[in-house]
Image 1 (cartoon, rainbow, N blue to C red):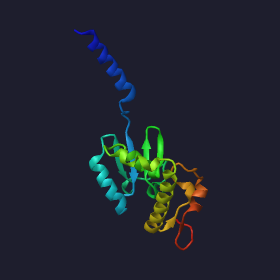
Image 2: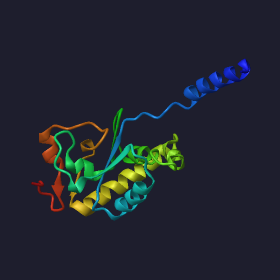
Image 3: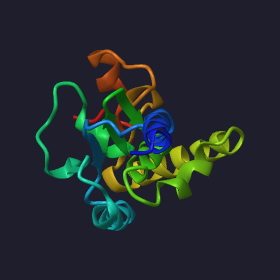
Length: 166
C-alpha cells in the first residue's frame, strides 16, 4: 500500500469535514396560511422540492398553541429552527435552503437588499392579513419582534369598523 495515498485520504476526509460539515439532523417546521392562494402556491412547490428535515404545517388546520398565537402565525411565515423561531423572509429563505434551490434566495438577505425586501414583504403580509381576516395586527405581535402582554394583545386587534375584535 502506498503511504502517500493513505495520507491523501486522511487529508481529504479532514478537509471534507472542515469545509463541508454534515448538515444537522434537527427538523425545521414552516408555519403557513393554507387559505392564502399565493402561500399555497409557494408551499406546493416547496413540498415537491424539500428534504425530509422540513415539516410544512398549515396554521388553519392546527389547534391553538400556547406558545405561538394563531393570528401571529397567520400573519407571516414562521420557521421553527433548531436555533429558534424566524419570521417573514428569513423564514422563506430558511425553508428554501432545505431544497437544492436554496442558493437562489440568498440574495434576499444581502445587506441593503434585505432592508428593502423586508419592507416589501412586511407591507404585503400586513395588507394580505387585513384583507383576508378583516383586522389589523400590531407590529409587536409577530415573530422576532417584541412580545406583548395579553392585555396589549387584545387591544391590538380591531375589526374594520374600529371596534375591538372578540
